[in-house]
View: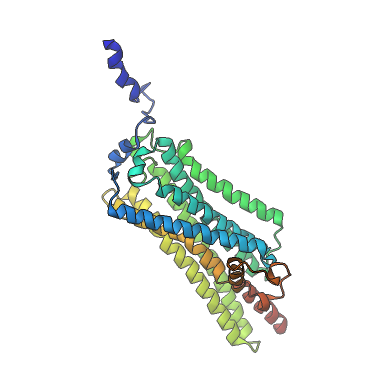
Length: 364
């Protein structure tokens, strides 16, 4: 009996099975990892935690309702049955999923974190990584679609519905893989010396990879939109010397500039601080990154709430469809074909390309 009792602790603690095998800690509690990283793990709810949770839940509800409204609007209005709007609907779906992921996080944070197992903690973080990756990938897909459309002088791309479906499947496949990578092995459970401070079960190398991946995506988006703006600006200046509508062209150019500034500004404000914080967590051990973690997490959450406003609410036709849905009204716009860009006012790019196309005929 004495021998059995002394062997019990040995079984519960992971040990080296060979000289060259790492020591793994799958059976340890979440508190074990938090204590090693120095991250505070609350034992009871305080005022700040309650306020953060209340604000987070409120934002999550808004995210889900706003993005659900966008998806319904695109479904019921046949004027939106084009590739760009299908991508916008998929963006809304990604942001809706982000709202669900954050909602799950809100009820498994603070003192509730102690109840999580290693598997459920990785699931909690994986849902967030999946949703955010899907949102970023959708933003990039929309930027590429707009780039192709403007340079081919089309109101809509000629991409078939099948290709749109393929793009959407690729986006979600990539997002799921990115979210699942830590759970399937790229974590620090067997490499305890390289655990992150912000995410105590995540490997530092994975966080660096994920942050750089998103920052590179951001740079690509900046380049694409800058190229679009430069092209449209050049075209409008050239057309203003041969047409009678320079004011219209100038207003169109400024509208595009305003939209680009809003899109890029929202992305920078909501994403860059958190991504930089992840890099500082690894590259700057003396930096107190944990003091700003919750604030930047809320900023990233707000991005999913802002996307429907930026990409959809500026569209007059979309706004009208919102009102019809909320007021339970029916309109011809939900069933009839589009009557031109002036009638539908369906997109800023519709206006830009329609103006460019007509003015090109007058120049020629």
